[in-house]
Image (tube, rainbow over all chains, first blue to last red; front, side):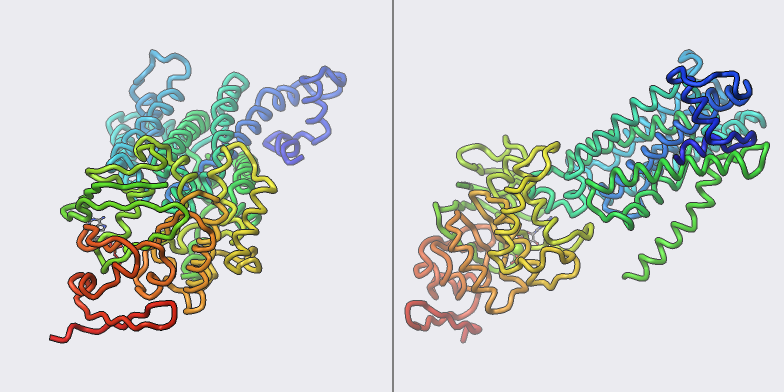
Length: 325
Length: 254
Ligand SMILES: Nc1ncnc2c1ncn2[C@@H]1O[C@H](COP(=O)(O)OP(=O)(O)OP(=O)(O)O)[C@@H](O)[C@H]1O
Ligand SMILES: [Mg+2]
């Protein structure tokens, strides 16, 4: 429902019934294609639908990744960006946009460089966070923040050295995130990659419960905390890598979705994972609608929208936390 | 059945254990006693794989613990740890005990009615049935301790290790919990500070001092002034009182 309405909204509005008819026509050959404008057809089928679908999967993945990280480092403020993964992705994308690094990778070189950047950052965080074969939550947090700063500095340096205003704008757009590049050719990759990651996390839902209860409790119940953390972190990096490579850096969803979901449905991961996925998807699809609508016909970067909406959530959260302690 | 022999353990620059040995005894309660810092918790941690000794062997049913997965260790050994505090997420007592059943289910399996029954039985045995829906964060120290023991029971492992399970418990529950451990007739090792409790509820005692087991045997043989005085630096007087020995302690009169 929400998706159909969201598809219709934008600089060019299309009524929900027409949206349904156009989708029905393309998917199942229903309805007569003459009963609506050709431009509406193109906008809905070629632009909006892939865009909303991308928003849904990226939002869901960010929500699930946020839940996972919060359990892993046992800290309610953890989110995808705390691992330095997104800074890595941005640095990779900046190198590709500004200096053509990795241009031999072809048309998708920017996305692929972002993906490799994410994995590289993760490898660095893991190397720093390991002590005698174990990854401890506090070390992972510190390593993530350090790597994040380091790679943001690298990105800034790249922008400075490139001395190209246009390139800098392109990188900026990337850093702030956008779903505008969605098209049918990249969607399957995103759905496969992020979908597989989310299924794996759900598969390990009880391990998340146990890790979130503490390492001693996890061990007593037969879960090796160090190894499980490593496995989950790799899955997280894969999801974030896909998300950032397809839509740039989108903040706050990974933080806000799990928190709201937890309020509604409680901390048990069997329920929390699907709920965060659903909320993340909903939040991002509607944030994207706002990004399209607010400054028509210009588009806002979606990271700006999620930031503006997410900041109050964060503040409310911090206030509640300090209230409790 | 767990057997540890010749355990050396170094943590940082400290030799925490030197040649310690300890085993469970079939169906019996083994008490592990010793002064603060003598290495009781560390020895227990070696027995469930949380710490790896530098030398020596830990065998669970004749398999080296180093070759076992965390899951097979947890299936064989249930533990109540000394510092399992109220950290972590806020779930209900029932859910918490139920998660102890994770050892018997693979990742994709849901919990079954058997699991839920084991949880109810475990809670029932420690008198905590009415707390199933309460949050684990809002329990008194003693209630939390009993929930941890309920989880051990629900886990249905053939060996139970308990590190100071009587911590936080009032006098009545100190006796009830140890009597319960006895009734379970499961191989168990219990770390205790209270020597009166140790003498009353253990079938066998091991006395640890500076990382060495300096005495081992029937409680009446270990709890002798000649044995205890050099280790604790206190005077021990034994008072006969019906079937149970009682002990009175005081500073060495020099
Ligand atoms: N991670 C560590 N690094 C260095 N030394 C340690 C470490 N953990 C414990 N120790 C030392 O090892 C010794 C044994 O500690 P342990 O916790 O096993 O004692 P305990 O017998 O359980 O004492 P208590 O009765 O106070 O519980 C102590 O001297 C302690 O300071
Ligand atoms: Mg101890």
